[in-house]
Image 1: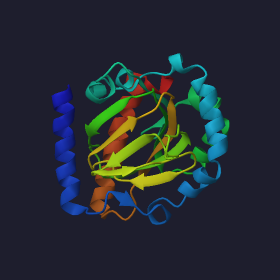
Image 2: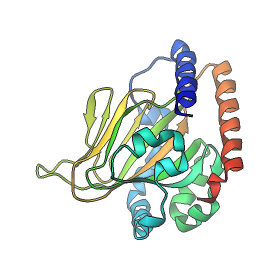
Image 3: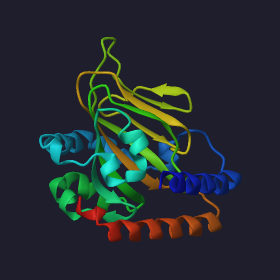
Length: 229
């Protein structure tokens, strides 16, 4: 299954890379202006995330949601858990109900295809990997990020070889088809909101292809019952 996933991802990247070029980190004001809504309300989103964290054992690990991701999720004995609010256009009603203020923001931003709260256990390392699909871009919002002794965020997101230290309320819009990794260099859990957003300014044929891909994956989400998590 991992080989099939990797092969499909490599093929998709080739198709999009041939037509779309751009930097690893993108201008949020241009590519996701509604990101400002989430930044303005980050404390409300954090409050809901911390309520979820109070029952962290009920939040699935990433590889429990997607077995093909075991190599980056189950690579060590430390957890990476995802509380999924929306997956490829499919809302998880039960989880949205637990985070009503975050859900309200998501409903106001239809360009957001997927949304989850990511919880990294202390000293968890997500090894280098690449996303398969350049038709979407990733928005990362720090919610509860432990600090290192130098005052910087102790959790480091490295994209295309460049480290990014995103503290509480900090955000970044980036292309996850670039190689990236994450390390939580602390004794505390790190929480962040992750959004996958339609990439604007694509050629019309790539828009059609992107919508077809999202439709197929969304159907798979429904068939596998992922929306019940």
